Image 1 (tube, rainbow, N blue to C red):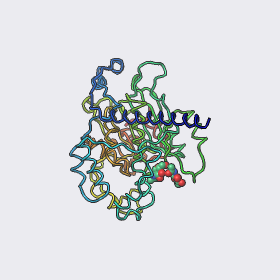
Image 2: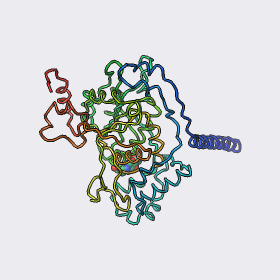
Image 3: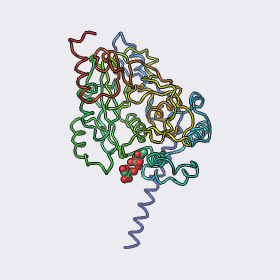
Image 4: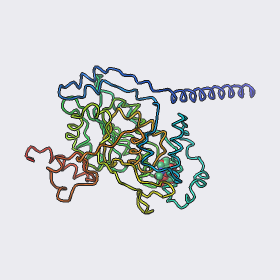
Length: 422
Ligand SMILES: *[C@@H]1O[C@H](CO)[C@@H](O)[C@H](O)[C@H]1NC(C)=O
Ligand SMILES: *[C@@H]1O[C@H](CO)[C@@H](O)[C@H](O)[C@H]1NC(C)=O
C-alpha cells in the first residue's frame, strides 16, 4: 500500500513537472516569435464609426495583434536622453539595450518568489543602498515583480450587453486608492460616467486599486459592495503606494490587452482631476488617422530632473539614477492610442521599472520612438487662481488637476448649463 501511494505521488509529480516544462517552452517560443503584422479589416467597427466627417474609419480598419510580444528595439531617442554611467538604473538600462540588440530577453520571475531576489545583490551594486529610504529599498526589492494577481476583476467590462460589435472608443483608467470612495463616486457621477456619446462613441471607466495596508481599517466589505454595484473596480494584490504606481500601470496594460483589446484610446489619470469629456472626445475624434494611431498626449514636462531631497515624495537617490528625465507627460491625466498598447506593454518588460510612473511611461514611449504631444488643454499643474472659479476657463480646457469631489460636481453641472455663454 505504501509503495503504491508513493508510486501515485511520483506519477503526479512527474506529470506536473511535464506540464510546467511545456508551459515554459510555450512562453519561450511565444516571446521569440517575430512580429507578424496581421492587417484585418474590422468591417463592423469601421462601419459603426463611419461618419463621413471623421477620418477614423481608416484607422479603425487596422487591428494590430495585441497579444504578442513584438520584435522589440530601443530607439536612440532614449539612449540619447539618458547618460550611460555608474548609477544602478542607468546600468540596468544599458544592459537591457545590449540584450535587446541580441534579442535575448530575460523572463521575469514568478510573482510568488520575485521578492526573494538578493538583497545582497542590491547591496553590492548600490554602495549606499542601506541609506535609501525604506520605501525605496522596498521598491528595489520588488523591482522585478511584474504580474500581481487580481483580487477584484471585471472580465466582462468590454463585452457588449446586446452582443453587437461594441468597441470602446475611450477607456478611462483612473488610479485610485482603496479608501477614496467619494472621489470615485464623484467621477462616476460626472466626467467618468459610462455612456455613448454622439450615438457611437462609447466611453467606459475603470478604477485601478492596490490593497490598503493591514495597519489601516479593513474596508474590504465596502469595496466588494462597490465593485458589485458599479462593476468598475480592478484591484491587485500589491500594497497601494506611490512607488507601486509603475507596477499598477503595467498590470493594467496586461489586463487591457487581455480584456479590452480593441480600445481606441486609453486615458490614464488620477481620481482628483476634472476632465471635460465632451471636449476630449471632440479632440480625439478630429485627429488625423496617422496621429490617432500613435498618440501620446497631455501636459508635456520636458526639462525635469530628479529631486535629490530625501524628504521629497519623489526623491531619487543619485546612486540609483543619474541624469535628467527624458520628456514625459504628467501622470495627472494623459491619453494613449490603443494601437500603441501592445508595443508599450512589450517594451515595459525590457525597460527596468522606474519608481515614478509617469516618468517610466515617458521612457517606455521614448524607447518606442513615440514623442509626447503637448496639448494646452491638459493642465496638470492647475490654472491660475482667477481661473479656478471661472466656468468658461474650464469649458475650454480638457483636464484640470486637483479638484475635490464636490468641486467636480459643481464644475460638471456648470459647464453643461444652458445658461453658460462663453
Ligand atoms: C504591505 O505593507 C505592510 C506594511 O504596511 C507589510 O506588513 C506587508 O508585508 C506588505 N505586503 C507585502 C505583500 O509586501
Ligand atoms: C509594492 O507592493 C508590494 C507587494 O504588496 C510590497 O511588498 C511593496 O512594499 C510595495 N512597494 C512599495 C514601495 O510600497
